Amino acid sequence: MLPEKQAEEAIVDAGATAAAEEEEEEEQGIFSVKSMLWHGGSAWDAWFSCASNQVAQVLLTLPYSFSQLGMLSGVVFQIFYGLMGSWTAYLISVLIWSFLGLGMTTFTAWYLTIAAIVHGQVKDVQHSGPKKMVLYFTGATNILYTFGGHAVTVEIMHAMWKPRKFKYIYLLATLYVFTLTLPSASAMYWAYGDQLLTHANAFSLLPRTGWRDTAVVLMLIHQFITFGFACTPLYFVWEKVIGMHDTKSMCLRALARLPVVIPIWFLAIIFPFFGPINSAVGALLVSFTVYIIPSLAHMLTYRKASARRNAAEKPPFFMPSWTAMYAVNAFVVVWVLVIGFGFGGWASVTNFVKQVDSFGLFARCYQCKPPPQAHPAAPTH
Image (cartoon, rainbow, N blue to C red; front, side, top):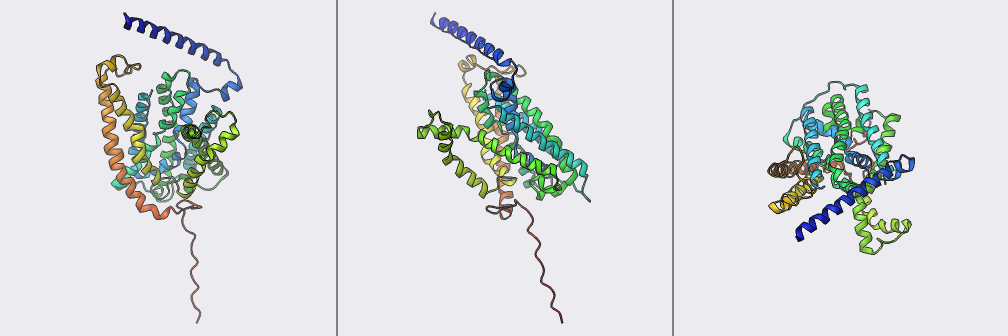
């Protein structure tokens, strides 16, 4: 009788929780400017946050990846890794900044698309990608890194009124991101072709205009927003360590976070985390934290029949079989381990070593051509 009683209590608790969630969502559903800009927690809010954090400055390196992969492989890998990211996010089961971040990314993506089309193809443009295996896997790994954003956005799930909706919201956010990344990367590669192989930042090829300057400023602001999202868990841990987690004063908490912020910013200024560095980070770190570990954790958690019977989250309707879920998880682990970490790590590190001389510490202009040196005048006789 005890198990039955516990089951009844669980059902009652679940029903009460669901009713409370519905009541809270109804209250928040009343439209107001304040609730639209400041209250997070609804599925709509979570979509904004996920889409805003999915891509940032990586948007500018996707044309570079297309020049390494070729048009077809670039499109295929974007869709493939986007869906794979949504799958591993499925396993893991303050809003105004998300509005701004999404708007900035959308503006920049469509600026790249329109500017490339208006500019047209450069003279004697070539589209020879993929040329080398090293470049091919470097480009693929950069896209793997691009769609590994839910390592950050999973924090959004914990702030949702109904966290179980996160997996679907993340998929919808990824589909929206496709409308930004695919047109911009394709248009830039169509217009500039192989020139992108030596220009990891797409801005460097576009003529300087007011529109481009606006996009540059917006992406810089977006970096501040993304930095805040990415460091939030670290802030909480640091505040707990130094005993500041219960402090109500925002000024004191901001001062307490400086020991975390300053070293990270200093490293970011020294090294340009762009292009080849992004690919190396994606292969060596993101491949495990975002793809391999969640898949392995899901497989280990539900390896026993009792765990599968009592699972709070059952297999999805489109895959109503635990065996199929195990097969997909095993595929993700093997694929990312071999292609992402193995070949991608080799290619990214190789490409990084080749280009390390072009980075420069505290570089004022990343991978820019050195100014032309004046040749000495010929001696007169």
